[in-house]
Length: 332
Image 1: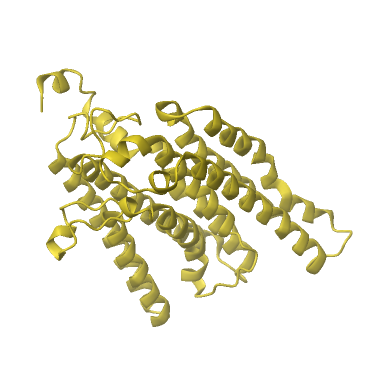
Image 2: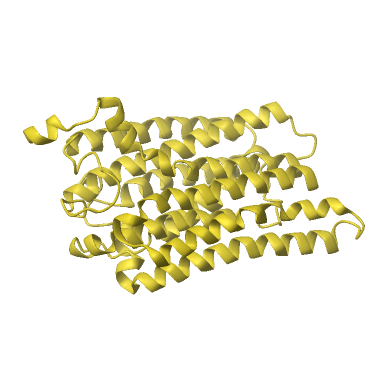
């Protein structure tokens, strides 16, 4: 670590705060706001307090998975050359010299170890009622931890199992990873694990997933010029800026289109035509102007100027999920 890095290093707490990337952590929280209210709506005679704490534990598991992924990304992008002196994104603790690669790698490992322990607790508790659901939870825990390391890859720890060059993010699969695990899995699992039921036909997870994906779309759009130098073949590198901007817009219109479709289906097939409460299902549309504003910013800005809009995409998802949760609670 250079003397200049040491002299400009923030306080230790701030270093780890930066490494955690708090501006995107709502991606782990927002889906669970929806999941809790979906559970309240579909589970008969649910113990609200019990299900609340169950969802909180699952939320903690999601946060630990995201934290572990972020920390490992901080380590691996540095050692693989994607984070260098030309970086235009938010500060990365390892690239800045504030932490060593060993420190961020170990922090990632310890974070995911805590997540593993929490996941094992889920499995043990669920196994007392249904082994099938427990097996599904084992799969979720194992793949979540593997994907946390595999998102960026790197020599540790995947090198120990012969996969030092395997990376979801460097192969252009990061968008799919986020869609599946920070959207579908995060939203569906609390009700499913609690009662072993997927009785949720309202697509409350699809719209959450598309908005979560937009966080990484902006991130990759911003970093494409340095990513290509490190052979990090994200969708932005493979298909260019226009593709990313169109993808962002499609994700927005899919999310809000599902909201309108859900209202139409619910009002025509489930409730009577004179039931005005069904209109409350359109409440998430109140966040559409913010989503549109963030999308328009992608056409006006590039590079480091997109930094605020990584968090901006996360804010859109969070606001959408809060409004969706309220609409579920009131209208169903």
